[in-house]
Length: 50
Picture 1: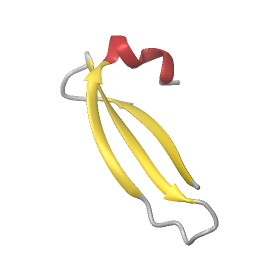
Picture 2: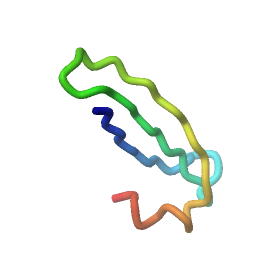
Picture 3: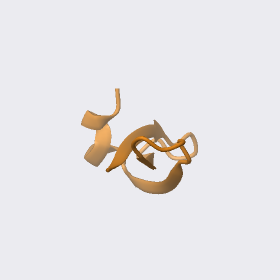
């Protein structure tokens, strides 16, 4: 089974944008992460960022 974690960080160059890192890894295996970077509007993702 694969696990997906999403981490969000405000973009320092443009405060209206957010950078999301989607991290994929497989359970019960040595953790080798695959990171996919996504950029979107802060207003669309603000409730996910704490």
